[in-house]
Each structure stands twice: as C-alpha cells, then as structure tokens.
Picture 1 (cartoon, helix red, strand yellow):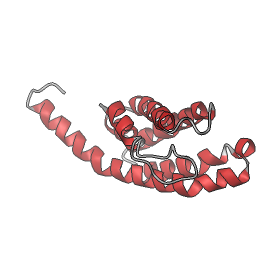
Picture 2 (picture 1 turned 180 degrees about the vertical axis):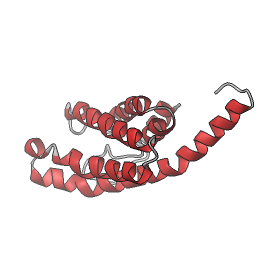
Picture 3 (picture 1 turned 90 degrees about the horizontal axis):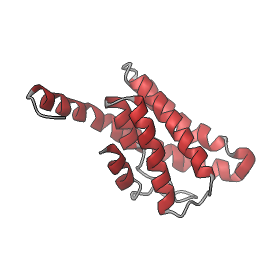
Picture 4 (picture 1 turned 180 degrees about the horizontal axis):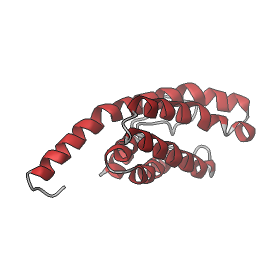
Length: 153
C-alpha cells in the first residue's frame, strides 16, 4: 500500500531545477513510523526511483545513490519517530534530505547545481514530513482500532 502511495506521490511534483522532486517521501515516512524503519526504507528507495523514472532519470545513474541516501535518511527518521522523538525526526529528515543529500553531489555535479537543489529539496522534505506527521498517528489509530475489532490488518 505504501509503495503504491509513493508511486502516486511521485506524480505530484514540486518545482525544482530537476524534475524528480515530489511527494514520494511521505508514504515512506509513514511506513517507517507505523510499520518499521525497514519498510520505510524500501518504500523510500522505490518511491525515489519511480519519481526519477517519470522524469526520464535526469541525473542518470546517480539516482541509485539518491535512492540509497533516501533509504538511510528515512530509516533514521523512523528510528527517531518510533522512540517518540517526532520533532528531531522531522528536523533530521529535512536537514538530511534538503541539505546534506545534495551537498554529497557537490564534487560530481558542481557547486551551482548542488546549491540550486537545496531550496526545492528542503521545501519538499518539509512538506512530505508535515503530511507524514499528520497522517501517521491517524492511520496508526485506525489500524489499531481495526485490529481490536478482529479485522485483518
């Protein structure tokens, strides 16, 4: 379900210098929050690859490295969130995805390209994490209520 939502989110683009910035992260953040960081990591990697594929892989094979970055950042978010450190989880996701991830590509893409990605990636990370913060607790309650009533989750 979360992977499907990540694919749908990858169609909702956020304006940037490259086209693969989208709402593909929030399902991964929700999965990391209520299922486990590992499920969130898988959803994050697949969601990013789908978002990049819809734009024709503008950074070529670098998208594999970005998918790994997303896995690690979402995994850390899930680890923090599940310890009830929700604000540090959001801050770490926004800084990791919005600032640190593009800076890693400074030597490959150059300073101008890396710096030009920071505003759009920071905005996307903030929007994705806010949506995840709103959805995760409600979805968790809904799933718990269904489980208590004896329905399959």
